[in-house]
Image (cartoon, rainbow, N blue to C red; front, side):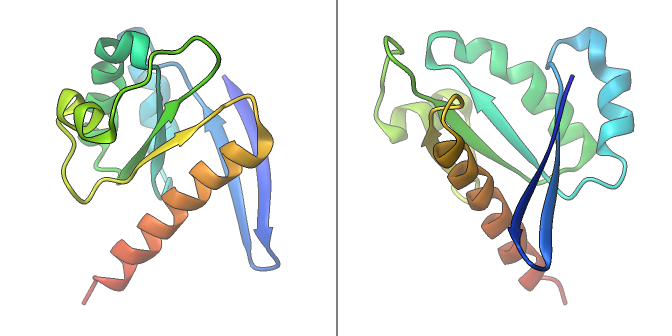
Length: 125
């Protein structure tokens, strides 16, 4: 498991927990989801089928989420519409590209999640 902290502004700090998506870690996800505002699901286009388990876990937790397609050298690239269809994403679910090895790219992916969460928060009565 990974942990990080990212300060986006004076009044917005993200605490980040990276957890594996395999079924055997479901109990860990139960603990991590408690108090979480949302999730950023990192997917690899060469192994999209492995993304379904973590998406199921996040959805069962009731967490809003965004999906980041990890683009790195040698990774197959597909049009956004094809990735969205393959993952069966709702139109409202953000889908962004990033290189998880790059701090700026990863930060932009996290910001897209925060923007999504703020939009959802604005929809509350």
